[in-house]
Length: 172
Length: 172
Image: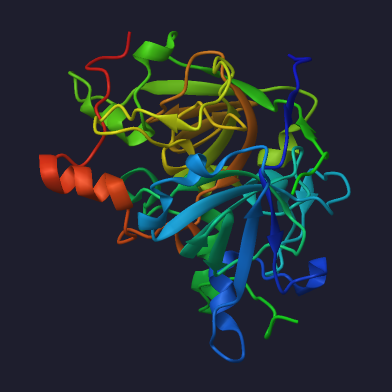
């Protein structure tokens, strides 16, 4: 079975963050809390003006937003990848690796403040210059399933006692 | 500020669901629980064979997966939209409306079983024929924030006593 359709998207904004190289970025946004200072990294998302300010009206009341973004530095995809937390290779769609068939990223970040077309964010795991394709409000009833079983990740955590992936010690 | 880059994605699979028209689809996947029978709608996601079976290895241990998909029937975007739960128009990026600048959808669905290249899913709010761009494992430490403030949605719920958006009574 195959399909020839394609979907093309234009970035709605760009991330300015302390992480300039892939090796510097934490592996999930929540891991950013594990920095040496204990501070959460702060980043901004500047929206382009092909969309207008009205699109983000009413957004400031949300504590978190989803960012859907392009892993713009990812070089092609692989069927299996070696996760940063160790263990055997896993099917790429069972991980959050950038090396996916469509290299689209997803991250729930804290929204601190909106200033004109700039969103100030905290707990961001995105590289500087990351193109953002969509912003969605984080809605607990649709998005929060704290007890959801997490397969090989639960197994690794049970074995090692950790409950989050390793990240960099300090944003550079 | 503007930017000319674009990102093009190829569907990795297609949804087969009981919802064939936009008006039939519930507004969030969790709302599907509000059907007359109380049963959760079941859907399948058939993966195309330009990706191989290895990409979903290790996925079956996850209770939920994220689907990132194209709102393929959405006809253009609007700055503000009228949410199905009522109230004034809201900035489109403060809602989960399909009428977004990049009409990309996001839904956390239950993974029941994997059979070859077919995923059996429950709690799906996607239309029949929806092109899926990415699957990601649902990882509670990165994704679940049950107490996250949800701005105008919290306000509407506080006023009306409801805690989820209205959906159709029964999948057709």
